[in-house]
Image (cartoon, rainbow over all chains, first blue to last red; front, side, top):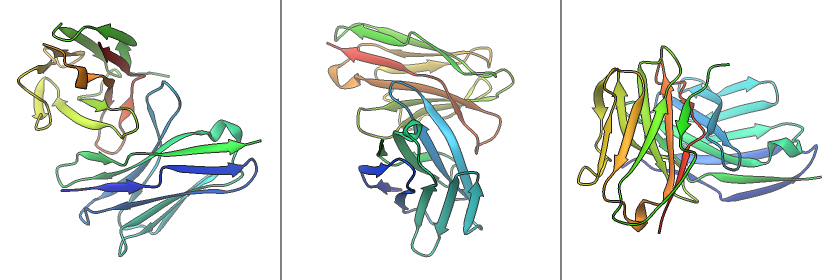
Length: 110
Length: 112
């Protein structure tokens, strides 16, 4: 079945860039997503990328998609302490269901 | 800004008891989703509604879980009887399309 994998933890210094990586298995995914979850809260959609794109930029966020390697990354420029959260990668399967990874916990050190 | 509402935010129940969660989606959103998120994992879809009809309930443990959306607006997820392994965050989301799901704050369930 479909599977999405992410590294568990990333620690960066405030002002640096953060790069969160994700691999997925469903090559037919039309959209791929990044969600943010703060403690005790629901998920917030950060951005998504259509499968025929290689890159999408939205303010401090840059999404890179390597369809050949089924690799997705999220780069956060000028990372702030408010960016500390869990980031989830998700792929959309052939029945339009979202399959989430286990999340990457980002810690931003002052 | 419109939000998905869920209640209660926290629920503690003893095993074998019944428990119910409520979700009010964003007005006008025809699609409603219930997810379960076990601590340390990503959300897993339990059931998806399109208006009042179930589109996907393949991951819903139907021997103990039930979900309804009678008028195609708000929805209730019920567990009876609750088991220790049901302890998790239950998230509701709604959308007008598949690529923008808006999540509520969730209900954290603890079964003792």
